[in-house]
Amino acid sequence: MGGHAERDHALFSASGAHRWLECPGSILLEKDFPDTSSNAAAEGTLAHELAEMKAVNYFYPAVISKKKITYAVKKMKENELWDDEMLVHTDTYVDYIRDVSMKLPSQPRMDAEHKWDYGKYMPPGYEAEGFGTADCTMVQGEKLFVIDFKYGKSPDGRVSAEHNPQLMLYALGAYEVYKLLYPIKEVHLAIVQPRLNDGISEWECSINDILEFGEHVRERATLAVSGNAGYSPGVKTCKYCRARAVCRARSDHNVKQAFTLGEMPPLITNEEVGERLLAMRDVVKYQKDLQDYALKECLAGKEVQGWKAVEGKGKRDWTDQDAALSKLTKSGVIEEEVLWEKVPLTLAQIEKAVGAKDFHDAVGEFVVKKAGAPTLAEESDKRKAITNKVTAEEAFKEEK
Image (cartoon, rainbow, N blue to C red; front, side):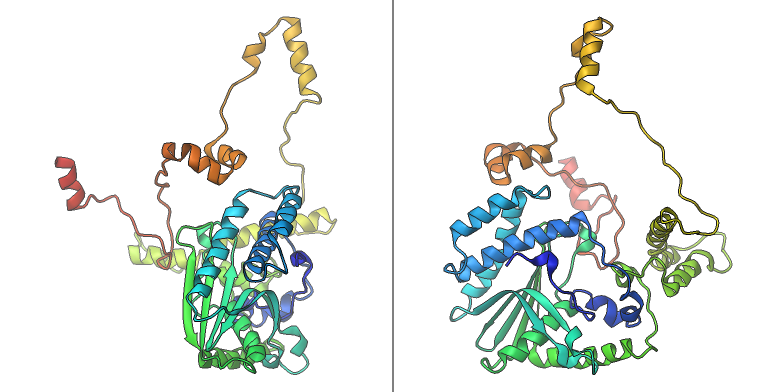
């Protein structure tokens, strides 16, 4: 329990499966690059630790008691990344698990944060490099459940359970263990993203679908270590690849998209607008990755032809603000009230200080969610399309 950040990562990790299955060449390309982390990842790790304890408490209270969770939360609150919203969002995750389990004929077996081995689908010599840790796995009768908790809050990071390779790999590993005790025929995959509206995605398939996927995994993993894998750069494929900044295939792909557009017509059609946006969607992200890499190299004393690291624009700051303001007022050059501006905290800051539940109970009636500014999204996005055109129904309503 609790060692989420220190857990081993397999070469053929389940969490990176969407990348290496699509771009098998990335397996050997990125293996010598260091792992990097972020505040968002650390925040997710903290939330996962709490979610794990709550799930175990629901099924096995003798293993983790409410008292133990209360003590753990007290310690977690000392972490600078702690947010009281974690209590609410992890409840949503455990509520989903509870609702699924209560619909079953009897209580399922539940494994939280369990390491599943799918090494039998790896190439010879790489069997130990096929494993992953699933947030929640349940089995009851003929049904296997794999449920994943995602703590991201960006709509662009919405994850679908349908044909999700990460969850399907967990299912492969779990099936190898469970099949001796349970006659599994169906598999239920689910993603719970409580920080997103409509953040639950579910998909069901047969165990034969999972086993067929296993053969596909074997084929792609074998290709990955063959030395002739090739590369398939793309927005989602490259997003978390450790070699993304200096991968030649990605670089050539983006340079081609940015500069090899052919003869430019006087005007392009909306169809061409859509096609070019899709073709060039990784160009800006790649430029940022390349700039970050070049800056690190320059700061390390290495040469990047045509570039150097320089000091950015600085800003002035007080060495002792209280002393400075006190001297200003005592000198009589300015009145004290002019130096201060009384501004309330933002809605989000107040909610964080009060706690989501108490905030809602006390002033929820005064809160309204305004529509966000229009933003462009790909057609696969789950959000409803909007236009500036007024419908007949809206026009009639205005007339009335």
